[in-house]
Image 1 (cartoon, one colour):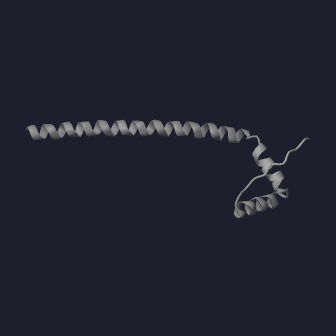
Image 2 (image 1 turned 90 degrees about the horizontal axis):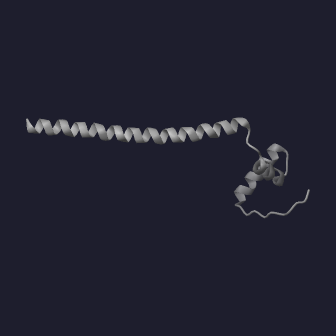
Image 3 (image 1 turned 90 degrees about the vertical axis):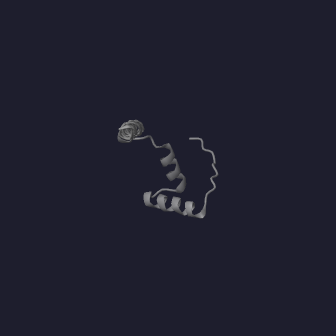
Length: 87
């Protein structure tokens, strides 16, 4: 396998975090970065991503529906108020 050097700058805290995470997994920092960056999502993660996307879409639709419902309710209230004032 042909390899190339990659230089990455980060804070001392980030470097310590990488070292800690690598230590937990019993690998070098380089191996940790390779594993986490080259990792292929599991089927569960793919399903979760699909569900998250659907939820984001559903929330946007719900917000629009609520806004439209509130606007309609406000129009009815204004109509009721105007009829009261006319009476």
